[in-house]
Length: 337
Image 1: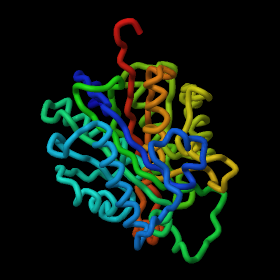
Image 2: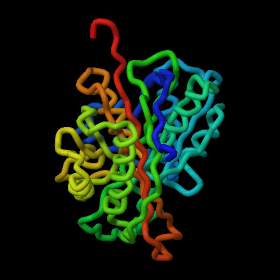
Image 3: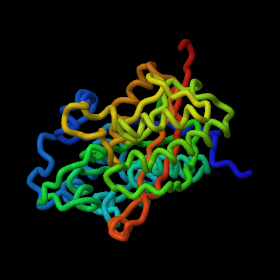
Image 4: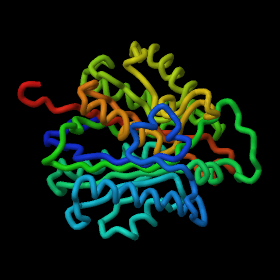
């Protein structure tokens, strides 16, 4: 049987990360961890889509400055977002002289980008790659659900799309955190049709990928200091715990958490929590990565999840296929640690 899981032989290291968060995100529990925060989600731009593209470009530029890297030193930039034709990412990249690969896995796009970049580096072709993503509440809401002007009432099952952008740089020489292994997810669809209940749609894919990863490497959940999914939300993450328990997988707190539950305060009108391509990316870059650096965690399994619906599929009343990818990060042990 062909395995979905790849264990890397090379040291694929995170050189550094960058994060830009919107105003609502800045007021949440992780506000102090973001590199940059904004007090406006439009900043004088003509549209929210143009704004999202602008912050996507800015987060890549900020990462280049942090790492003192020139564009011509990069093999690729791999990234994506939730907009049609990867609007935000593609338009951001027209201002950068970097070979570009667009990657779409909905809210799991950041994870997919990291996997593709890691495979390029493992193959020996590449030495330095940037992975990036972004999302915006207003661009996602009017694309997948309702015109913003309607001020439609949000049901209790809904989540709040995160406004922000994130990027990281993978390389072979510099860094304390490495990509140890990855598991490429399968598309799973158990018939959920409610586009305001993404957590329920993505839980089966998250469980499928988690089970495949642990089985392939003969590991228990306790092998990791933290297992963190992307964007299942409060109800979705609890459903995952229940389903995992039926497979004898213990995902109790604090071993397990979800990015959508972490990024917002539960009483700040965010429904079931955060979602969007930037949700898991911001939580990983701003919080989880720093906790790996300060040795709070040694091993983390990061499982961003994505609902692969579209405007067309929603109008045709199609069910929502979902996917989840897993990336295992670990801190490199140095002498004396």
